[in-house]
Length: 208
Image 1 (cartoon, helix red, strand yellow):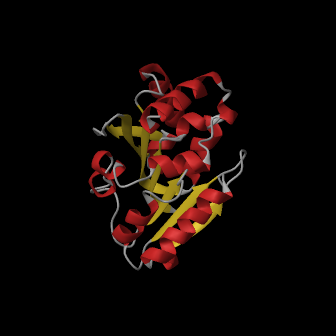
Image 2 (tube, rainbow, N blue to C red; image 1 turned 90 degrees about the horizontal axis):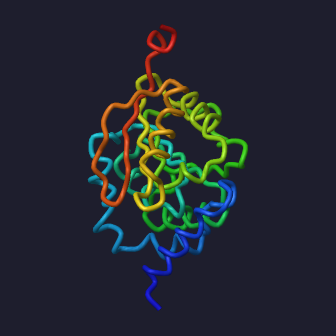
Image 3 (tube, rainbow, N blue to C red; image 1 turned 135 degrees about the vertical axis):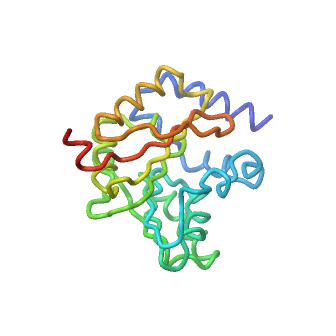
């Protein structure tokens, strides 16, 4: 059995499910988050210029911490990464990785629900949503919550899987984010992906 082909079959079959049923299972993450992935999605390269020392960061749909751990290193001792996931098993994986890397003090774990990200009161400078927005049933609420917890001028990087999210669906996602006060800044080149870097408009721009 070829594990790559099995993953592709699983992802294809998920297109037939309702959005709320498309949450990536914890056991699949362990197949995807491995050293080989670093050849395709190197966190330091993707996040270069977006994460800086002392920053508060939101890692939404963090899985078992593939991006959480590198971002905690990049944010330094005075920075924080708020790692958010729906599944407790995912967060337990982040906890183990953070402890092993000596970064536990820089990472805050938040278990969200289907109705809330559970991040009230966070004022982050950057938010990452990697391969997860297509799983969100209520994208309007989702982007509103992110916007409410980003500082003015804060950035949001959305990355979606090329073979799972159509160009039309991706553009619709960006339109929805725009309703919450985000503007497209750039469209980074991320392998096997559709990506957009958004910025939260300043108060004056949102009021205009």
